[in-house]
Image (cartoon, rainbow, N blue to C red; front, side):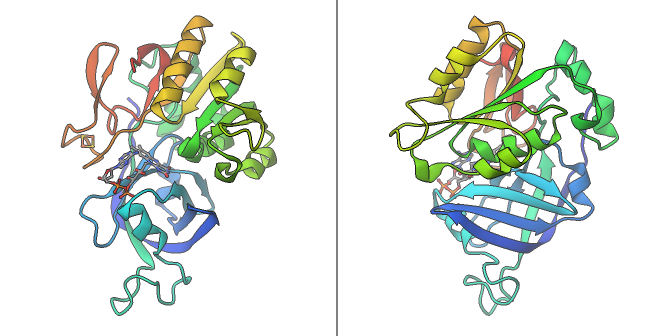
Length: 290
Ligand SMILES: Cc1cc2nc3c(=O)[nH]c(=O)nc-3n(C[C@H](O)[C@H](O)[C@H](O)COP(=O)(O)OP(=O)(O)OC[C@H]3O[C@@H](n4cnc5c(N)ncnc54)[C@H](O)[C@@H]3O)c2cc1C
Ligand code: FES
């Protein structure tokens, strides 16, 4: 069984930068914990003055640090964006309280890509649960497949970590509302991925939805990984079924606990009630009904 350790502790904020308008990248020092992070997993992030922690996916892990990429959408992420902004001196919030240059986080949580409950499929066995137990990632295994990632909006945050750990480079289909919302293009290019972009307003790349471009180009030799808003995922599931393609989708739901206690994130998977925080957030395409 693929299980992971989880930690509930404070981490030093190394940086929390606005990478473009409304989007931030938070980097924390996490020497021991970073070894337990797996693509598709997330942390529940504690934010001062906010009651519930907020779920944010692991964006990247390198040399004892963990990074998160998030957009400011409400009160929690707004306060988060103001933490640790003055590199450990005094943050704009928390002045007089020692400054919030540390952040409380619970994780890594959930099951990531390749760790769905049904571990019997051809692809899953290739990824191998053993490799996860040994804290390594699929990169060390010879995977004979052609990966295709589909990302919508901030779904790009979690699939970046995945792309860095797959043994093969592939193509990422990435759709946003407008050019100003496109993130991480250079990061994907740097690791050898081909990027196909669409924007709803046509300000960059194909004009329209990314799933339209995807349906024209997807082949049955591809394995799909998708993360993004529900309407995009619905279309991805449809396309995958039409073309008989296997793969994974990463689901999102409002989360109060993130560890399976409140039952607030239930979803029907293969006819059964499952919890997105504990049994997911990544599930096999063939099992998901949206
Ligand atoms: C597993 C998972 C991974 C995520 N990863 C990322 C990421 O990498 N980057 C990113 O920008 N966003 C991510 N999100 C969405 C992020 O959690 C929400 O945008 C955030 O919680 C909003 O908090 P807020 O206080 O700013 O907004 P508010 O709307 O004020 O939040 C109110 C409440 O709703 C919850 N909530 C609101 N929107 C969402 C949502 N879409 N998903 C879950 N809970 C929500 C909050 O936790 C809070 O309890 C992820 C969500 C999940 C479930
Ligand atoms: S968020 Fe509480 S059970 Fe999933």
